[in-house]
Image (tube, rainbow, N blue to C red; front, side, top):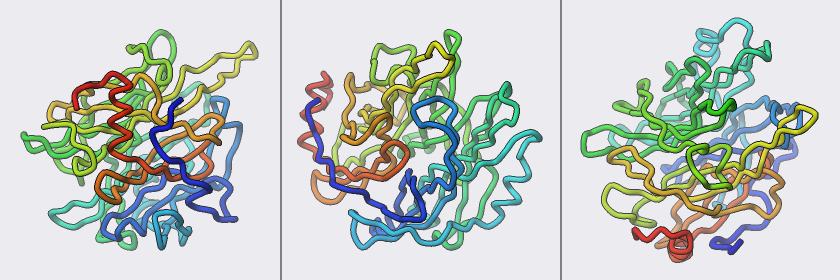
Length: 342
């Protein structure tokens, strides 16, 4: 696979307290020097096999550059225990907040943080409940949890957001990772979430990318939206943005009954945020980390200068890596993957 990016050496975060860290998100108001990371405090099972379980906590991070961050204290969110307890179903186990995203409201200067709230059923025959949570405050030290942004309904989950610009009608067609069952098996899909107010619950929209409806092997099993790249970095035209999409090959069911996961890679997609439609997904992955045995998953992009930026991803749900992206190389990739809209 041709390299259209530069993979940085080493880990962005290295802390002896935590063997596995992932899902970095950064505060733009700090010039991307502060943020949050997900730390795994206990792992049960094998990341290559369906059914492994991570118990996690969110921690604050600080760095003197975009190359290295230090883990500070655990993120404290007012009313977290009370809110979680209020909708924890009987027979389920809360395994800790996951996969945070920071968004700053430019009109109010308030910080909104979104995160996964996973409830795992103690009865293996009952589906887990994965909801999208929300907290708001002036900064990382004053966050207060609200009611969830999107609740899990009938086993249909909500997590991993991609925040879109406000469209001409005054609301946002954000994207989330959801769940769909087809042909006897379930997979992760990309679904629209309609946000009329970023601080209040959103509405569920349509599924806009279903791996089983496509013929793209690298994303044939699961799909999850990543960050949208700013127009100042690469402009795809009116009402369109280039985005990162995380995709996994189809699962492989073994003779012994276990399900082996395929490779998770990073690709690109074109999003029509005015109408809430995905126009195009790359036929090939864009990034596969050289050390990844099963996962390269992107969570944050920072534009660093004209036509250049840093993408952060976690490898095998264990450490955070940085990659340099350039507008020129991305344009080469788009042409190679038969997108000519630029």
